[in-house]
Length: 569
Image (spheres, rainbow, N blue to C red):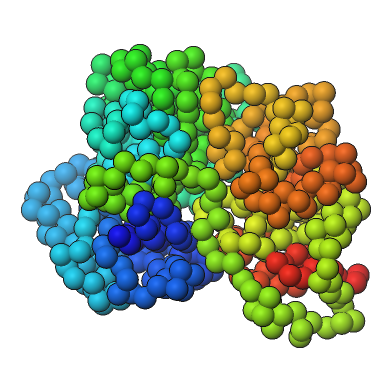
């Protein structure tokens, strides 16, 4: 059975599943070259079929990951409808209930017609699943937790299908819902509205608010949290959901936050927002663990992209096994939709097929494809090598060269995991400025992240108390101060933490070999690993994308599958 999972909203994606196993998963933005692309992922579907040598007729079932989704025009710029307040809420509540149903039915029919036009698939093979169920399903099936034991599943995001969170008990392919949080009490909406208020892009730059938070004055940010944010929502301990503290819905909270936060320092606003988020999440999960007595926890939804909050979660005493869906925002919905449908349709118990071992689900490019680009390079500007590529790259890295790597299948998700990454040595702090000057142009407070060989993990990282897979950059770690200087460029210098990718040889042998060779030269088992892209653009996908970024930036070398290109300057 071949199932196509589709997310056609913000950060659109497509996933092809065969007998429970992910064969391909691609985000639309990688191919349109537009960050956080929205709408039906035509290019991602087409690319997935090409990667797998399938045709449209091979798709047995198409599963949409939300029952309702706004059209592309509405989702392209949320700032157009963010700046609203309580009076707007009152006016909207006066609209008749059938108004929403008309919109819902119209959009559903449009989505069916889009799928039919592109795939030629029968209406009876098109399905719609609940948004938050798909978040839970993605984390449940992709985790390695025993499916014979009870697992507590929690989702939190801005909103989807009119809800902003859910709590489930999962066991043996059964999903029992304990609670849902309405979008009016959305934690994610508070964070995104504050992101917009601070002059950043909502649904994209929330990570910048998180990165700024450690610079806040603790007393000032605590006052903002207590006097402003605490008046918005709270955790209902008994019913395991978030609730409003007043009539104000978080969907209409922009005006309130704007009026209350004006005149406050930007770093203190960030600090208050982060601490408030951590507190709400901590309380909800703690209460849920106490009530259910379950020790296995899975998490999904955009709120859990917050790696600092995830670190707080990892310290909760009652958690034995923790799995956070990699790139847990809406891009992961297509995975959850496909997996839930497959396992429910077949009642298969072969859950090993769905357990995530890696995220390299995009396309890998051939020597012929690469050579077409390489042969036209100006030999006066570039030197091209085709042998001993990892050893040569390791030597260049040890000499403080910056290398863009575009090799192997492209990784799925918002975080580069080595195959579409910029690599640089991590033990010289001036590399931060060098990287920013050459390509990244990051905000001064934003850290880079490291990729670390598994054999060096204990040397650099303070181990978590719960069982946790650190392969996917989903959580920060406190660091071993004795060896801090080895990875200083891949850390947040204010709080001395890092968001690592711990790499095993089995997951990515080629990348592992490169870093291993570098470790033999430098005596350091880690490198800076940052996404291979120009600022504001998606991560590169193809050698063509990589070559364009290489030429437009000051990156020193480009490492492909079969060639190493070095600028002569």
